[in-house]
Length: 344
Ligand SMILES: [Fe+2]
Ligand SMILES: [Fe+2]
Image (cartoon, rainbow, N blue to C red; front, side, top):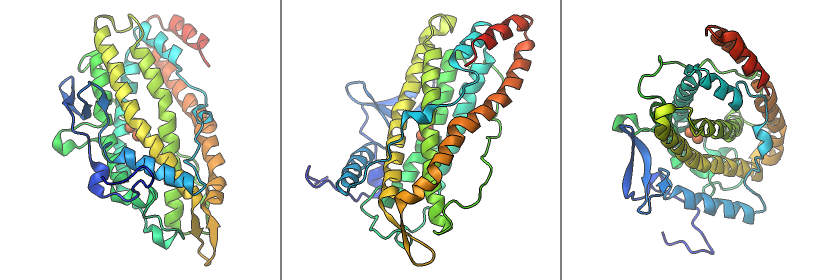
């Protein structure tokens, strides 16, 4: 790369954005070949970070120089009731109801696998909808490697036997529990927000879809952090995994590597949404509207759904199932009392 510090390069090829470091050691855990790898000093390095990370930095700087900024997603996005919360998960596990945590790790892995769809999102030709030239922005590279890299990070490259985040969760699970500890489980159908119709009716559907897709994925990725922290705390709880304690600590380390990968995702999405706020969008009637006012239109409602309504509905749905599960245990009444006393 010939870029100087003063003028970082703002255009990147597909191959550059998909390029990985020259790892000193591959990432293999519990017999699974996983993405990413280790540098000579032993540090874990995420996959497809060689071109992507410097590119993100350059686009962030350019955005700031134009008077914008990456979208300031804040910790308020992490709110909402949790059921079970971390303490309740520990109570279940200590009382021998270990399938709950096993199921959680399995389900999270399967949901990560579905993230492969990010690479398939139909990015419209932005020059039709956005006044400014986006070819030197992050959003101008969504179809040119960025969404593809993101999708592969989540779902891996199954044809090459390389696991992404899906396999990393399964590896963590199997380290903590040993293989086939419980029957396989599928995610419950996700709760979808009631369709309120178009939020941005004055612009083309394709560009509204891009705005809302990026905002939705940002919220999901940002909130995933809650589950990462919780999982690591459980895996590192002394004595909880008996003779598998050392493996459970390694499992927490795997989750830490997923967390490191996800930093690139959140950083990317903050950049894309900040860029979308900074541009001018063409309206269907031949006029224009500021991207920022389009984001304002839907952001608060989306956050309210994700941090208040959805957690409450999820908790209601889970409470019923969990009470039934706990009462199957011979000591169910006592465990349930302990469980309820630890509620948020
Ligand atoms: Fe992920
Ligand atoms: Fe992600």
